[in-house]
Length: 340
Ligand SMILES: C[S@@+](CC[C@H](N)C(=O)[O-])C[C@H]1O[C@@H](n2cnc3c(N)ncnc32)[C@H](O)[C@@H]1O
Image (cartoon, rainbow, N blue to C red):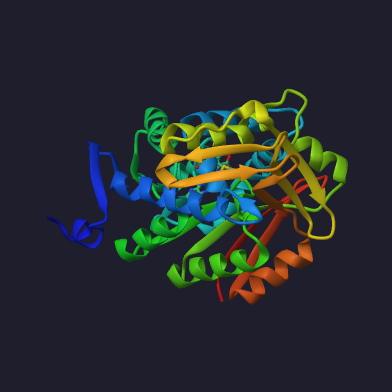
């Protein structure tokens, strides 16, 4: 057993070829965590399901469809900014950097950053981290287009992946966290998370984070409740996932997708609203759930920020801001930071 395997005993290693390998936690650990989390979060007066459980195969496919909806401005705006900043980003990188991505998903935007690496490196090292199996498919697609790419995928939570990276070796990392996924954290969780990233970063590492900006309520609510009903399907799919994986009997017809902007807390809040009085059994989580008509299950927060909030968030978590880039309409931002 090599040194990396010894350090990562909780993972199983899958070697696909000389340029592609994955590390995955043992499946019993994954199922147990899902059941325990669901049991905890649905057994409360204010029910919730963590947004990380949206992304089974179907959920990841639905998210990809959301990304190309006319109402969903974040993806196309982030792509627009990434295209614009390629030359500037290149100035911050050199041959010794490798790319680490939190919540890599389809790795579509990643390609814009890999293009920058490709210009300056003969062999690119990429470490995607994603809780969803979509990571394996995206990695295989990337390999077809980048001959000099070496991928080490970590199918795990952000935190698990960051610990993996911290123990891995001493090379410099550009860590990227796109899609405004950071907005799913509450402000206090977010601060803890930024501190975690900061603590695993080395002196010369860089961190690039995409954050959505405060804007008109109507634009925001349409982005999370589109006319084709794709976001509604995405939200409801988490109940199908619980049915499939935890042996439950949610009737999706008895729930409705709700997305509203909370101006005070600057966040989109997504819920699943019970349309009737109902009982649900979730066998593998060992719970029998009663829900009243109109009762809500909270499934996602998506926080929006002002520039001064971003600056103070970075300051408070010991980051130095190198750049904050935005699109022309100032709808979305990308911040490049390093350790103070
Ligand atoms: C909103 S999507 C963003 C995907 C891509 N980065 C983009 O910008 O389009 C969030 C991605 O993060 C993954 N994810 C969500 N919560 C996670 C968690 N706690 N740990 C690891 N990955 C997570 C999901 O599987 C999904 O692929």
